[in-house]
Length: 209
Image 1 (tube, rainbow, N blue to C red):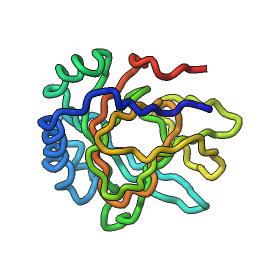
Image 2: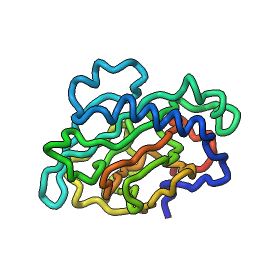
Image 3: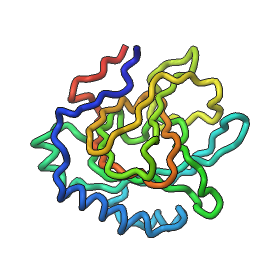
Image 4: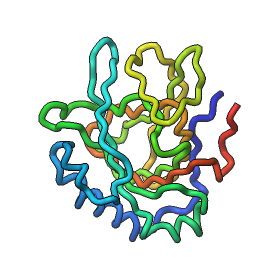
């Protein structure tokens, strides 16, 4: 079976001070925005990723994906990550799930199929979720390579085959291969996580075939 993720419960929990910092960062810089607009482009450089609307087709219906803005925690957490996780990280941040326009799309429960733009692997540490049955699902396109280039976002998704899924527990490190197409399903509101990004696999978990 293809290894898409691994639970890394031997890694230490994030100290309370950084959990508090991450949640405060989200509350102060993201949740105050009712709508994702060009106003985000004026945010300070602490924002890691960029705003890009993603539209995909599921069951013949065109859907606008949720969005996952991510802000850096590097000035505060880098020493702890170096000492307790790895020194080979590329980014340390906190991200939360939002909709592109709450007035128009408040019921959208999915992050569409994608590979990550800024990383090949990621350690994910869930801090809060509005419902306990949010699933991260990994997908393969029949007849095509499993590992995709960064930033791949297929528009038509009905022919994809599910490889694996996980309902991520809170306060536990989960390690993902971000080059495998994945989506997040059934997000009814909040989903906030600390994330450590890598360009390589310093933890030695995944073997590319």
